[in-house]
Length: 102
Ligand SMILES: Cc1cc2nc3c(=O)[nH]c(=O)nc-3n(C[C@H](O)[C@H](O)[C@H](O)COP(=O)(O)O)c2cc1C
Image (cartoon, rainbow, N blue to C red; front, side, top):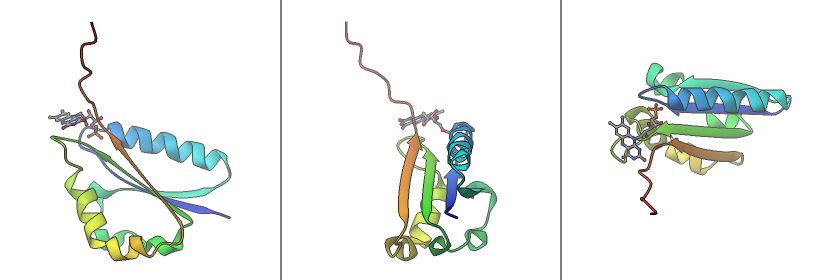
């Protein structure tokens, strides 16, 4: 059975909503998931990424920056992430002002 780890950081809740939707879709495919809001956990509490077949990391963006918790996780675990044999996906929730076309 495949296992996917979902990690996210959110300031206003959007990234949690998107992560929950992603998790539902993955589970519908019969894949086991574990999800952590990185704002609520110490990095030491997050299991080793090698235990998973796929990792998805999401962050909200504020003034062009990821959340501190996501940045900290990626920095602290970067050697582990680099060695991963499994799939790594990254997404952001952001809002970019559209140019006025007419
Ligand atoms: C104060 C503030 C600053 C923001 N800065 C950016 C930004 O620099 N770039 C961007 O694309 N979106 C920006 N956004 C839009 C957010 O990224 C967007 O609302 C996102 O869904 C927030 O995710 P969250 O609810 O998970 O925190 C900003 C929103 C706020 C409220």
